[in-house]
Length: 267
Image (cartoon, rainbow, N blue to C red; front, side, top):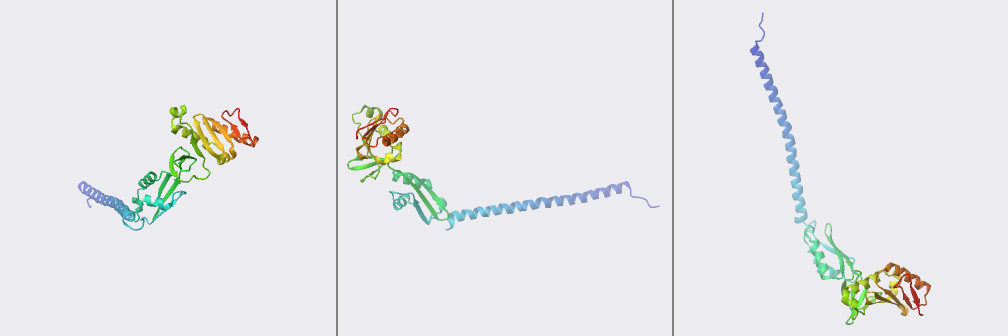
């Protein structure tokens, strides 16, 4: 009768099987870990190549270099003047152009410029978008005219007065208002009054005369005058004056300093 496997033989066979399964499992896990690691390396290499390629394209290649400059928004200034002062580096990589430096250079050189945007126009251009100040009042001095914008900034002196811009006269040399508020404050009041005039009345205004802080007079076409008073309640005064001009078209003098009790007289 054949004898069955002994206990020792059974233990040996079991140990051999476990060792074989363990070796097989370890190999499978190693392969599983090896594949993701290879993919990660390939992805990292691709990203690196893209980064190097992008850097070369922006800085080293001729694909994105400055070849043209375009100026827009000018009225009094010319594109040639703007571009000469902007001094955009032609041929330089577009990405290296310092737009803030160019903007500051233009504002410093041209007080007439209210704002300017320097923008990159890919792949080869730089755009200079200019907004010029517009005069709302003129101050005459020495036969020339100082232009004043809507914020009270005196930004340019010209030989010829622009059409349709009223002249500012400060008759306040001996006025207490000048000592109390200063010329700039009185100028600000004049600009404030001018800005609150309806377009139709503004077109007819030839002179804004300031005698004191609370004494502003408008001189209109046809020899008409308007006593405005202070700069307070401007929108109300503008509406009242519009109504007075329509109601008494032949009057020569109008008073809206107290808008609740306006008056017109003369012819």
